[in-house]
Image (cartoon, rainbow, N blue to C red; front, side):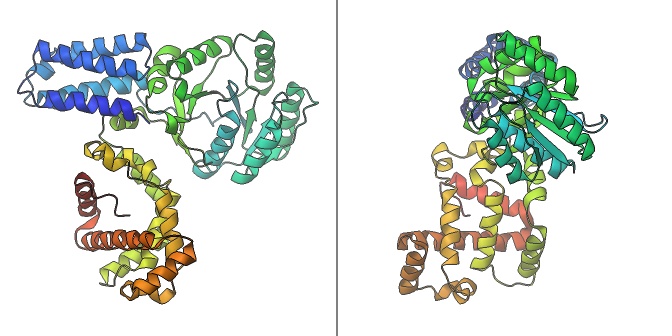
Length: 454
């Protein structure tokens, strides 16, 4: 997400950081570059104008002109204004209402509402420890109800059955009654895709809204539609009061125009980002963290939270003890590390959160292929337990057998062994100097174009 805009802004600020001091001229040049970068990212023109005017006004003030490090001061101003543009802070869901707390999902066809409903159900169960029931009031799209039943089963949410022959309003009434009987804490209603100009469909969702009395009415919008996403959300909000936005498909959006436009245009907060196809690929939207990632400074806080949540602490503790005792890092340990990385969405999902990644050349970033993780796990599984414990035993004939067992080539085994040795060196550094030293080593290797050691 934001790859193109991040690259453009990084190049702009690299130039201004090289200036001994800031003048009206180089501030003007910088703002022209920023303006062009935002327009190319499909940020709404009105938002671009307001944003650049605010930054320019502050940049010409005393805090920057008299600063010993004007480039850094300028970067801070842009960061502050990005945060303000996107909404200051994360606005949590209102879950304080009397149960079942109703969440109404709205949006256009194809925006990813049904998948997002399942993601939100999983998020509420895992992060908020809530019992969640879902229901589909979409009687117009073929297989919409079956799709929700499938994804609800995948995440472990209760599914309330509905039928295409029923009226959506009656479905919602029945679901509400059942959720109360079952003592469900949250009921999420997935509605049919509709346009704000379709008065009949809008009248239907108003009736659903009146009956359900939702604590949250969330508009799911495809981020890849850029500033059109903001305009659609505004038009929908004019017809039905929204409480927040969920930006879907942000993993496929290299521009970021929607995230930067929505709050200013609609006045409604972005509450979540859909960051992938899997049901755990939903992130709470934190404007300060997104601004940091946008400016190439990473998002260490989100990364730490993700590690805390997804890393198997027992396995990590065993490995730490093993390293502290001076015992080697073997291929079984390496496989565990690869599995943990896969569980976190792979290296590509983590890259924009690692501070300093903006300095890594794009051609090196392009080398990242999370399918390599799966291949390497398959190769390690093809080994004997003795080979995993004593990697030095793996000679030419063994490499051939291992490759055949995994359905891969000998060169894949060679690549695995090379990357395992790099990872082994990093683990030695970590046992002596901690995580910070290991991260510096990783960034150093990337900067030299050596590829990922994982």
